[in-house]
Amino acid sequence: MITRELNAAGVTDPALRAAYARCRDLNSRDGKTYFLATRLLPPHRRPAVHALYGFARWADDIVDDPDPGLTAEERAVRLTKLDDDLSAALRYGRSAHPVNAALCDTVFRYGIDPRLFTDFMRSMRMDLTVTEYATYEDLRRYMHGSAAVIGLQVLPVLGSVAPPGTAEPHAASLGVAFQLTNFLRDVGEDLDRDRVYVPQDLLSAHGVDRELLRWCRVHRRTDVRVRAALRDLGAMTRGIYRHAARGVPMLHPASRPCVGTALVLYRAILDEIEAAGYAVMHRRAVVPRRRKARALVPALARTAALRVRAGSPFAGRRAGGGALPGTVTP
Image (tube, rainbow, N blue to C red; front, side, top):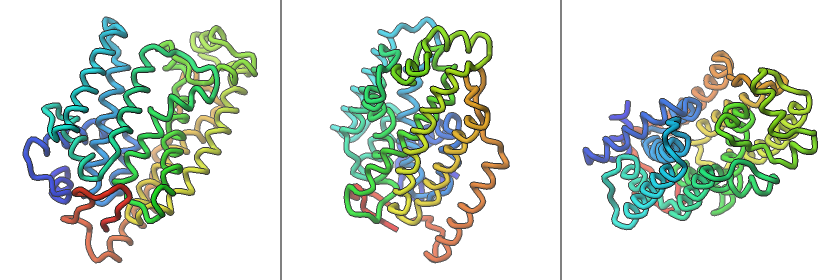
């Protein structure tokens, strides 16, 4: 499958093909929901999405490497090395680092703003030293780099039929909604890393502190006060999903099934969290396979219909290749 995708994208250099394949492996291994949705894209658009996700995953793995022997300083050195290599790649157009090589090629093909990666790396470094956020506004500044910019990076790959800049706020909201869903799902796991992403003022409003969160984690129970705080964050996340959803019709028609399905699948995680009464301190909410299938089948039908109307399965046709952000190449 990767051979077909790379051929469709016009990637011919063997080293670059191997780099894209590495990113695809990272996506399929660690981002199953994203990877499933990406399968709905035309083949020529998929390698770029894999490259963007692969870079984000690589940096995140440096931050969250489970090796207890690694200090924050050592992780910071690794992040700096990755960042320096990316900066050099974007300056000279090449890199020996497999993930950076694919990312650099994607940035040039689609005209992605390099400053988005600067913002992303800034948030990654915050995870090495910041363990909590006093207010939602503080958390929002972190999420700009860790989530919103991901949506903005992917947007030029997806293509937009809206005026320049119109789809960007919705793409950013989708990244934030996904991350807030992760925060809700992973409260217990994040606590094990000494991180609390739920804003402190929201927790305090319900009488929740770290001691109570740790008690819930240890005793595998969820206190009613914790449930109330998480419910408030869940309601906020719902509103962000609604704003993000308004951007789906602004995308190129060929990209809408992918993004729409990703939105439905990730919002379903929030549904499962709510159905469990926000009992997430000791278990992870999972979307049942049958529900994933119900979301995927209509998306597959829409994708097939688009390809029939286009008179082509999209193979062998390229988007990008130096295109400007938001440029549509059907």
